[in-house]
Image 1 (spheres, one colour):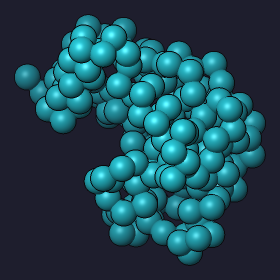
Image 2 (cartoon, rainbow, N blue to C red):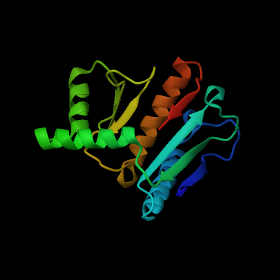
Image 3 (cartoon, rainbow, N blue to C red):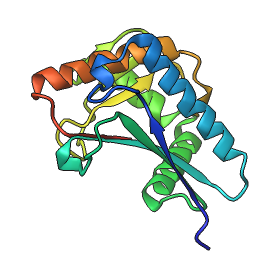
Length: 178
């Protein structure tokens, strides 16, 4: 029926400033704003799925000079996400454990793909990644919804650290964050 929401979140007032240059307090404010927008959009019973994504660099089609993210809300859950959730539900029914928590535990135990572990968040390169340099930032503690996360200080520090490393290592590449 054409129902949906598409919001732009301007992340910084200055031109050409992006996540690696954000202060931790500024990143906390950006993440907190994202959480508030997700909660607000989820109050609308027409929406079943909310996605936040960020394009950076010319290769992604981003031509704006301000750092920004996009917030999308739709009345349907995309098939890939729905399948992932159904598979996680089946895994839980079979193992009586969370699929994502088991992935984190395995990655931490093996230490082959872990990039950073600060005790609150684990950053790793997933097995059989869908794209080059795909990186996951996941909470150590079981969490169902990002908008309920109270560790924004630690998440901001981790996010800035990882994005700074990517910028330096890959010479400020274009990227997509979801």
